[in-house]
Amino acid sequence: MRFHILTLFPEMVRQGLATSIIGNAMENGIIELNTVNIRDYTRDRHKKVDDYPYGGGAGMVMQAQPIYDAWKSVTDSVGGRPRCIYLTPQGELFNQNMAKSLAAEKELIFLCGHYEGVDERVLDEIVTDQVSIGDYVLTGGELPAMVMVDAIARMVPGVLTNENSGSTESLEGGLLEYPQYSRPAEWMGREVPQVLLSGDHQKVEAWRHEQSILRTLRSRPELLEGAELSLDDVKLILKLLSQ
Ligand code: 6GU
Image (cartoon, rainbow, N blue to C red; front, side, top):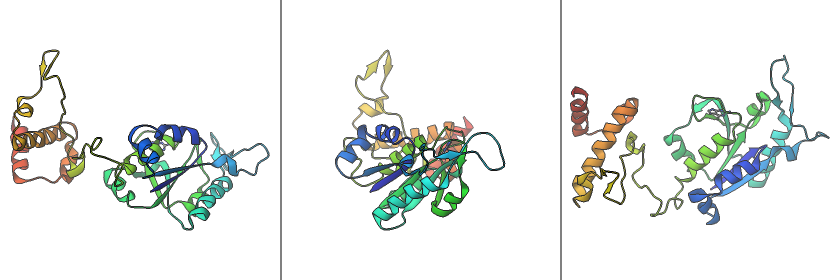
């Protein structure tokens, strides 16, 4: 799978994704990162890529032409029009289901805006999806693009190996992840829950599932609405609520 990132800060994106699991996946050729510097496509003598907003107001607006030409260089090279995602707080909220379905694409283009925004006409021309990563405002689309690439890439077959799987997914089945423990069995007077030392795999799985429900109920109760719950799960929730 290939990610094309249109940005004014390609080194930020490259560095942010060069490490650990995603970095390894790139080294192994499972995913590819193509950063495109929008500034390389300016026709301005001073390499300007932004200008004042028509109608006045604070800040600068990224101009249409450099972004369009940067995008065109990508679509010409791939010989098609991959989905093009514009990162913006005005977009649809990113979630795990979106990550999973985007992981099925062969190519994805991300457009990272900066300053006060991007000329609407180039968005109308090239963007297929507008996505936000949460209800807060960031200075640019680079961090959101990195967040999305990380979440999407780890869903691509071969990116997560057994050593770094985490296999049962937090948020898969709509529940939060259960707590994890490693050696030693006692640390600072705190003991690992006995059931995890019992060697009884069924009991361990049941305990973990209960912990997932407990955590979800405590921290993110609204997730339970979309969770896959058994009758026993519902009984457990009712019991926890009545305590
Ligand atoms: Cl996608 N962009 C910016 N600039 N801020 C954000 C965001 C995106 N998602 C949440 N905040």
